[in-house]
Length: 113
Length: 109
Image 1 (cartoon, rainbow over the protein chains, first blue to last red):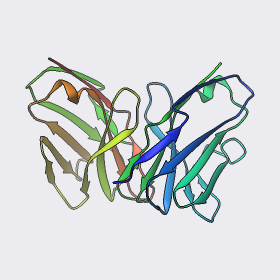
Image 2 (image 1 turned 180 degrees about the horizontal axis):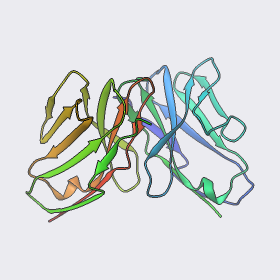
Image 3 (image 1 turned 135 degrees about the vertical axis):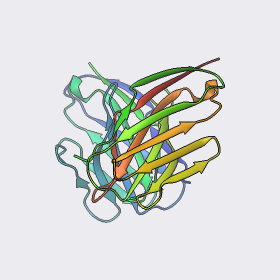
């Protein structure tokens, strides 16, 4: 299984600002995924990021709010833009198979004040 | 929605006892997976069971799948304090992982 790291591990941000979260994998992977986990809730898929193409967003998530970059096969970023307190969540990246098992990073705990 | 729903929401047991968690889902699936999450950190993949399988074992874990009832169960035998975590089922069908709300397991030493 891949080893995945995320930066930052946590942050406290003011509303209206943006935060970029980095996800680094120790091996080349085709698909990377970004999830949001709101407090006390389950995980919801934000988007799938493939290298060399635009990310595919799930219903309820838009590129203007959550722009994603995927410059190479080991790295991706997710930006949470124009944040509000409702964006306070844990954001997780994962790698793996689209319909199979996935391996998750440790998550980024975001608090928006 | 094919979202899984775990039952119970919370479970507290003594060390050494067995823990059983259940998951129900709504639509047909390719596979069902169980994940563990410790204290709001990243998820750890535990086991995947395909739609044509009925039971699978991995160490102290036993997973069953009943596609006719659209349900699965995760059994952890001889539980340990280190098993304390949230456990999520997740299904894939035509879409990637759709997670349930999870069961919070507390194992008391």
